[in-house]
Image (cartoon, rainbow, N blue to C red; front, side, top):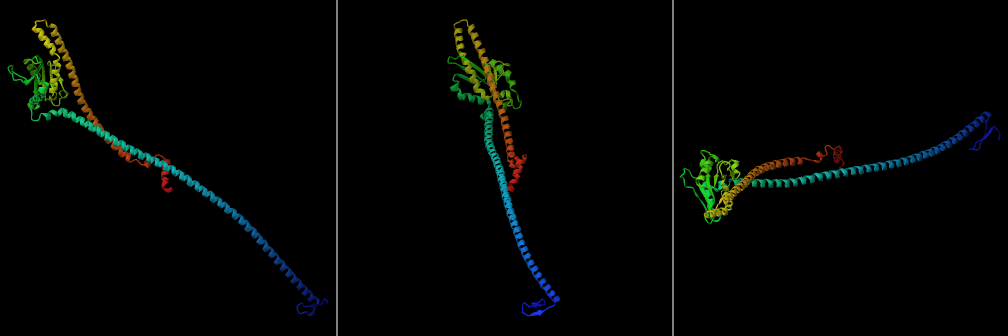
Length: 397
């Protein structure tokens, strides 16, 4: 084949071309080959780039996956730490709440127990005070009744009748040898109300008493005092030869001196006493029993006198006995008077104690009202820590 012929690869036909055409065709072939080579290279490069991109993407994806896995691990770790922290916080809160609840329960139990103990104590104390008040009221009432019993005993009676009835009720057993009658002898211008004389079996007199009875109702108009009758009573005692003089009186009912018991007025008139009616029988018994001890001396004295024997020593002994008896009786009378005064003082003291107990009951009632107003919140009001814990309780629940 010459340089100027070219065979068609498709139809196999040969045709002639000049150098310019050949060069052009050659150039065209070369351009096509270049283009084809270039295209192949481009395709190969693109394929390679695609592969590289895919590899890069795979690496990036792998890296991203690793980072994702790592991040997820970190997140899981953080989640675990957060859960652990939450759990620790919950446990701490639960423990704090449990502690606060225990303290609250302990405080409530303490308050409840204290309240219960206070109520029990108040009831016991109230019962004790009520009993004491009742006892003192009873004691005061008994003492008042003892002092006022005359008014009830002498309803419908005069004072003289009352004393005579009292004496006659025990005359046969207590005073079988005694004389107790009204004084009807007024030849000296005056007379007493009653004369009492007691004797032994031989007829020897042991004691004699001139009685004067004065009732408030008998002297309502003049309102005389007891001392107004002392002189006349002493005169009647001497006129009738009585050893003792006793004024039985209801005068001056508010006078504490005469209400105290047996009042000895011997500093003004010898062997004279003032008594309230409730001491009528006890006074006779006291003087009679004491005087009976002197009967032996009197009997011996009478015997000696009848035998014309010097009785100086006997009279001296008898006088000493009488003086000693008088001293002893004065001491006994004072003791009796002190006892009566003590009774009156006790009545006043019991009344004051009763008033104090009533006042204490009122104070207990006020204390109870204050205790009822105590709450847990008020108890913890000045404790910021406890107050904060109690404030947080509703949120925790």
